[in-house]
Every structure is written in structure tokens, then in C-alpha cells.
Length: 64
Image (cartoon, rainbow, N blue to C red; front, side):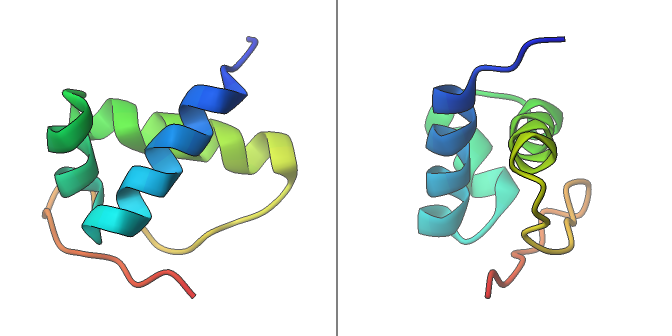
């Protein structure tokens, strides 16, 4: 499955700015699951892992 790298970077940036996947999803008018999926696909494409996710709880996740 091909991924949209630009969309993944846009979502990742929104997660960093908002401090959570829930906040980013709200800002981008996406479901929390879709926001998580975009970042996971971007991570897989780049071969990196940005940290733990708490998509269902709405908790913020620190990015180091």
C-alpha cells in the first residue's frame, strides 16, 4: 500500500504542535485512528519509531 508521505508529515507535525494525537486529529478533522495510522505509516517508511501512543485515552504523548 502506497502512503502519502506529505500527509504523514503534516499529521506528525500537528501531533507535535498539539501535544497529542487527539488534538492533532481534531485540528486536521481526522479520526484519532487515522491520525495514528498516518504517523505509523510514516514511521514504517522512514524506519523510525517516534514513541508510545495513547490514541484511545486522549492522553498526550511526549516526543523526544
